[in-house]
Image 1 (tube, helix red, strand yellow):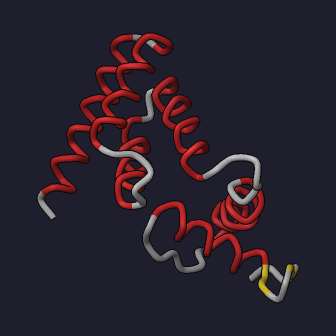
Image 2: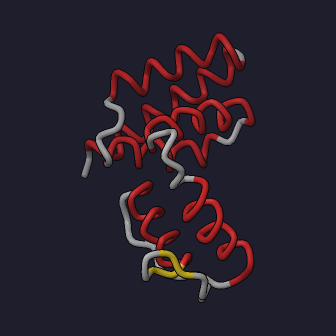
Length: 125
């Protein structure tokens, strides 16, 4: 576990806490350097910077994931946005429409399908 501290919490603890906040489920400490860098730097530092909200960052991430064709990862973000109350059904559909004009119609359509899939899954819970 990381030993650097900030206000009594280790960097890893802050990273895991931010991961819980971003995704809406508990994260246990994981093995390996990739998990460590993800928790310690991406979440404890980057996602925790004050200039943008989690919602802002998630919208940016939707654009990047759609442009890269990473719709399986987008589904995780869509579910988290719904669970955290950051975006509703209509807003998520609007993100897909908007992005279709900037990253291509096919990609926007795939994001819309991912939104539909997650909405169906979430409504069945």
